[in-house]
Length: 217
Image 1 (cartoon, rainbow, N blue to C red):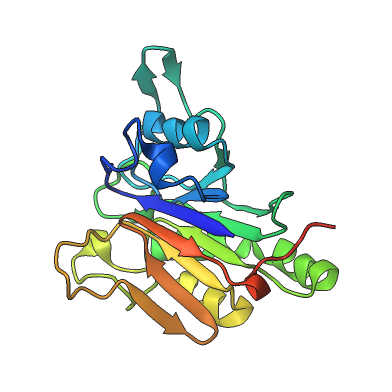
Image 2 (image 1 turned 45 degrees about the vertical axis):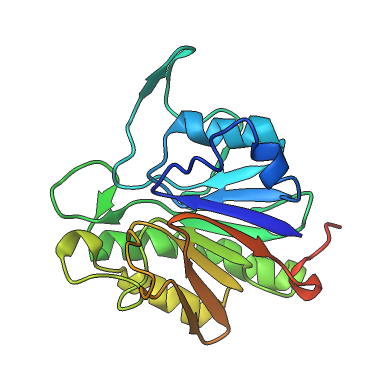
């Protein structure tokens, strides 16, 4: 099974007429934020795959286009404060939007607020363990965890509650964006316990091994 992850930067390889040629093997897409609604809609409509997303700190409350104003990308599934089991793959997703608060803009939260948001996921994660034998497969956020792939400036510092969730519930992957990648030596993949943490800036193709794919009931 192959996933397409996108975040922060619109890529010409995706937003082009040849998208089906380049990404014909994609089964599911995930956005980690700060991408326009029309870009996400193009992925959904062109590849005809489910797309899960969280909003970034630069997301607009309303986006205007040729089809009129809308508050969310058509055909995509918002993961914020939700735990969702994909009906086709059986994979379990959970998500938290936004970044650390730095100028009181939209989709910005304090560390304490992020703790509260993470705690809303806990009951569903525990139920998943009882029902499916595991808590979570993909934790999807815009911001990175504290001290991992983050930066020193307030806007790009990581979230402490994310580290706790990863250590406590051990998702297979934590996907995030927010931190732009400009150097080839910049760290974009880190393992924390059993979890692989990936910065999905731009796009990445992720091939899941057979043991990571959980068939629906």
